[in-house]
Length: 197
Image 1 (cartoon, rainbow, N blue to C red):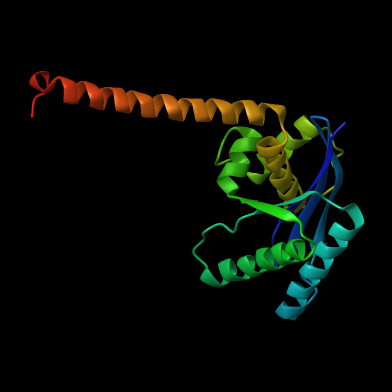
Image 2 (cartoon, rainbow, N blue to C red):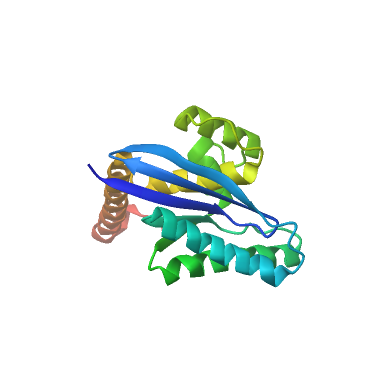
């Protein structure tokens, strides 16, 4: 029976959410759901170091097969975006230092995957995850459930049995679209008298 572990991270420089999801066969199960609380660390550089060290500790403890991380969203505050980018970057660097593959997901993609609505609220995402994964409601931070949403999105994309079928359907659809275009082009070239120019 195939086992995979996905480390999900919702990067943040004040509160960083993380989760670990174990996939046994085709069933995901929540192993860990928590946050790294960084607000008490005044020095920003020390916060970044803490993110790096904590990510390494999670990797060395649980030996995940893949890191799934949320991509920073584009907001109005450039400084906040830069800080989020640094938090994401050091988490990815920690994963790379352990030869761990990673993928990043846009917030709208994550919300769409979990709830079917790319503009869902954090509350809606958390509620849907509880319904799907049946984990106890112990966290008071949406950063943790956001990290779980990232890991779940990765599961749906990479290890859900339906993902392979969906990928095959997408490839087939692209081929059909190309062949229709080619057929239409051939028709036009073969029958120039029926096409208005």
